[in-house]
Amino acid sequence: MTQVFSNGSNSSINSNGLKSSLREQVSSRPDRNTHDGKEAVINATSEAAKEKMMDAVKVMLESVGEDPDREGLLKTPKRVAEAMQFLTQGYNQSLEKLVNGAIFDEGHNEMVLVRDIDFFSLCEHHMLPFMGRAHVAYIPSQKVVGLSKLARIVEMYARRLQVQERLTRQIAEAIQEVLEPQGVAVVMEATHMCMSMRGVQKPGSWTVTSAMLGVFQDEQKTREEFLNLIRHQPSFM
Ligand SMILES: Nc1nc2c(ncn2[C@@H]2O[C@H](COP(=O)(O)OP(=O)(O)OP(=O)(O)O)[C@@H](O)[C@H]2O)c(=O)[nH]1
Ligand SMILES: [Zn+2]
Image (cartoon, rainbow, N blue to C red; front, top):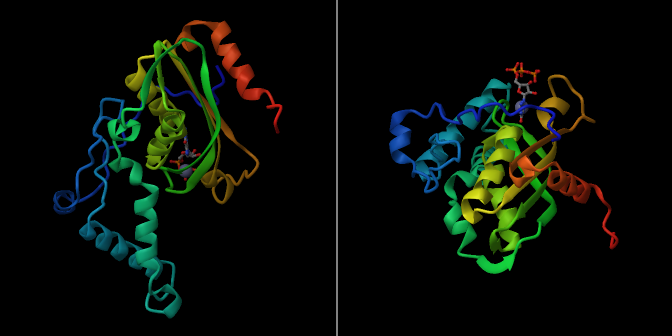
C-alpha cells in the first residue's frame, strides 16, 4: 500500500470554536455521519453566519495593516465569506441525496475504477488549499453506482476542512456504506499550499495517501491490479 503518511486514528474535525449563539443561528448539516463516528463541524450557511465571517475578514484586513474601507477592499469580506461557504459546502451535503438512488443491480463483479478525479480541498491546519487527483475503485457485489457519483463523493468530502488521510478514508468508507461492495480502494495524490507557499516551502513535493477496504486490503493481487491500472497511460491520450 502506498502511504506517505500513516492514517492512524481518524482524528475528529470537531472543536470548531463557534460560539453557542452562532451555533444556534446556523443551520445544522443534514449529513451528521462523518464515517468516523464523530459529529462534524456545524456549517455556517445562514446570513448571520455569513455576517460573522465578514466581520472576521474585516479584522484580518485591519490586522495585516490594510484599510477595509478602501474602495478595492469594500466587497472583500463578502467575497471571502461567500468563497469560504463554497469551499466548505460539503458539510451541508448528504450521501443519500448525492447518490440520488443511482444504484443499479447489474450483476457486475469486476473492478470499476474512476481515475484522475480532480479535487480541491482546504487543510484544517492552515486553511490553505491542497489539490490534486483522486483514483477511486471498487469491486461490486452485484450492485454498481452511477460513475459520476464517485466523483461527487470525492467532492463532498473535499469541500470541508480536511487532512488528506482522513479525506481518503472518508471517501472509501462512504462507497462501502452506499454499495457494500467486495472492496474499495482510494488513492489521492496532492500538493499542499501550506508546504509550498509558506512553512517549509517545498513546492515540488506531493503526498500520496491510500485507503484499502475489503478485498483490496486482503488480497495483494487485487491491490496490485488497482495500482497498475492507476499508473498505466490510456491509449486515447
Ligand atoms: N498529515 C497531514 N499533515 C498535514 C496535512 N496538511 C497539512 N499538514 C501538516 O500539518 C502540520 C502542522 O504542524 P504545526 O507544527 O502544528 O504547524 P506549523 O508550525 O504551521 O508547521 P509547518 O507547516 O511545518 O510550518 C504541518 O506539518 C503540515 O505540513 C495533511 O493533509 N495531512
Ligand atoms: Zn496546512
